[in-house]
Amino acid sequence: MIIFLEGKLQTKQLARIEMNVGGVGYEVFIPLSSYDRLPPEGESCRILIYHHITEADQKLFGFCTADERDMFMKLLTISGVGPKLAISALSGLPVRELKNALINGDVKRISTISGIGKKTAERIVVELRDKFDRGDQLDAFAPADGPAGDSRMRDAALALGALGHKPDDAAKLIKGAAQKLTPEMTVEDLIRLALTK
Image (cartoon, rainbow, N blue to C red; front, top):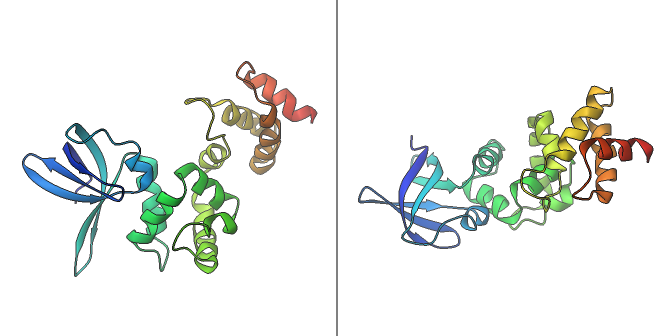
């Protein structure tokens, strides 16, 4: 099984890349989320791989982050969802938004992805909703546009959990308070705001 490729990014297109690894060319299919993170053509690159093997075919699917590959593999566990649809799902929504939609049972959001109708979206939600741990649930509602490494919402929600709040309640409280979140606010400020709403 191939789990990653490291070499020169020979060709870069929206849905596929070609990697030159020690003089051997590999075709790798990628989601849009990974395309945005790739270096320019000709530069060195490392990409995580899911090696899909069937009786008739072998294909390599590539990802720039472990989160993308993990979500791809979760999607493949669902009956009727193959690699093409899983890549389409990751191209249609960033991993964090897709995770958020799954955790919150947002069938409408998932069915906006090209190739996924309402029934398939419902099946995806039912089968994947409970496959996320508490950390995933807290990460999913953190603002996607927040600064990298900003873990204040997660830390505040964990603190509320330690105070006896259920994870869902803690998430709702923090999500409500986060609308007033400023760069200067501390975790303690955020908790205080959540508890005084």
